[in-house]
Length: 411
Ligand SMILES: *Cc1c(COP(=O)(O)O)cnc(C)c1O
Image 1: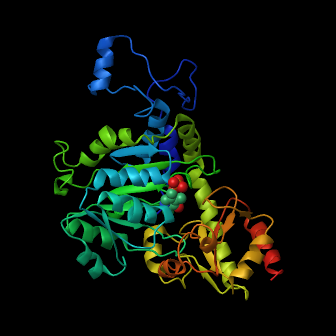
Image 2: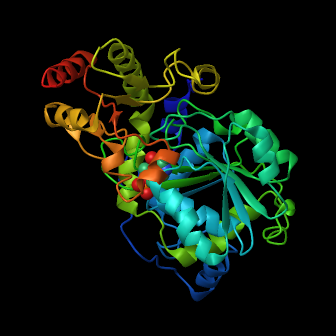
Image 3: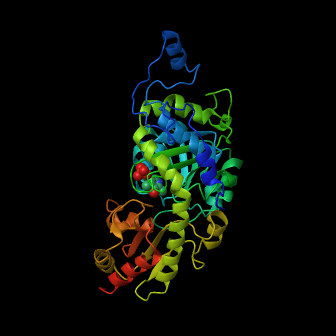
């Protein structure tokens, strides 16, 4: 499962134009505009006849190098770096969707993705059809000629549900619909989306890639495998029907929305990429050890981690993500009050949102991320009052176990 050549491939890639000092890492080109020698060369750059940087809302050398690195290790056709995971998701759907179309997905979605679909896109005439993505007949029934995409999160958060990616991509492709997945929860150092028929990844690079919680960012990774001549909207966009999505995104949508990644962020996230494989190995291994430990504690009512053989999606998780599926788990105590008391007494684990920071982070999803949802909505999304979400950092496992056990003594 793990991409053994991840670091070698990433570190071998040089940036295209060396600077005068032979800087080993990509310099930060903190410039908004780029100067040309002649009006003729300016015309060529603006018309797209030559590939050159003009204005940093559109492209920037530092950001492009970050994109090139991601392309080199994922083997993708097009990579676009944006200023947040939500910018990646909104740019993707502004490229795919049209008034009168629909999106087929699950209601177990990241909170802002859910709101983007049911509030923001609805006002532009886009319908979101929620189905149980494990009910393949229901998925098949929900898709019709106006479906712009089948969308799934590879591990839902905080429910930790895992869908069968091969099966969903097969259904999507049989119906001539692209399969778009939010793959934020397993980094591409350990998971190869294209092997499971995913056409487009959207990723919050705020998480594993940034690592130290340094910066917001998002990625759209287009594998160039979908034939867009099947899309009522994109079929006429470009001569090569496999490149139409990327063409529309790069030439129009992302420029008009204006949420391109900044060079400073691209620099920080390039550094994050270099250590991501190693960090993920450690964090996911520690997470599994904590899940096994928590499962044995009498105070803990249940543990949600797909790497446990008691998890209902264990086998599908194993086949898709290996035996340490991610560095996030949920666990339940007897009541909300007990969760709050426990969280209060943690000393090493930090009380904060965000995922896959180098520090371990905890929160109570129902009263934080989902606080704006009604009790009924939370019940439908299986966001329980008794659950906490733990994102496991780089601390050693014994220190984390000690912190958890000491805080439990206060209950
Ligand atoms: C955090 C997250 C997002 C949103 O990313 P931002 O960078 O915060 O905009 C989307 N999807 C998933 C699964 C996430 O965890």
